[in-house]
Image 1: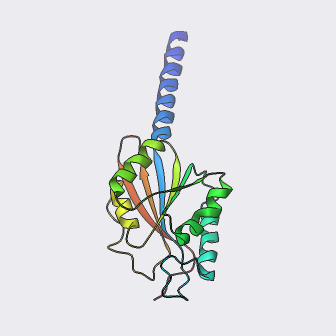
Image 2: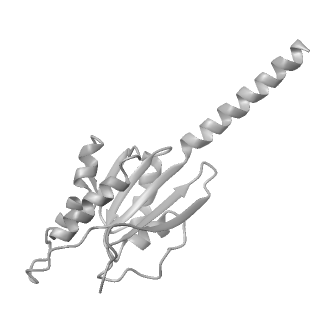
Image 3: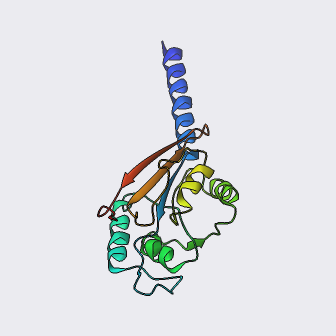
Length: 176
């Protein structure tokens, strides 16, 4: 009987350790478009966030407050940096800038650097769906319209490499 208990305990310990190791290799990626930009100067190609955008950035931070982020990525545009800057600061993280030129290479780099972690990526209406695809999932929407700012894409990649995507709305509903 004593040997049987030891064997059961050993099997349980191996199973538990294996389960924990698999969880540690999984990654959760939040992908969001920058919040509403200030359109008061049509000639400005790199505007700040509007008042509505600043409010949306706060709401995003509130939504992610219980998620211990390990990295926050942004393009080098004012509106994207402003959308996630407070979140990065709250998590004591530097804001990592990335280029939109090779999203597959970017995704591979993110996966290599962030195994077992939770990260946030801020992009643009014409890139966030492509970023999700670069992580191996089907885009959750056909396209993001220029007036849409309320989409939060969540990609979860398990230790086995299987990826799943979900889409949530946050903040005030985007209007045309």
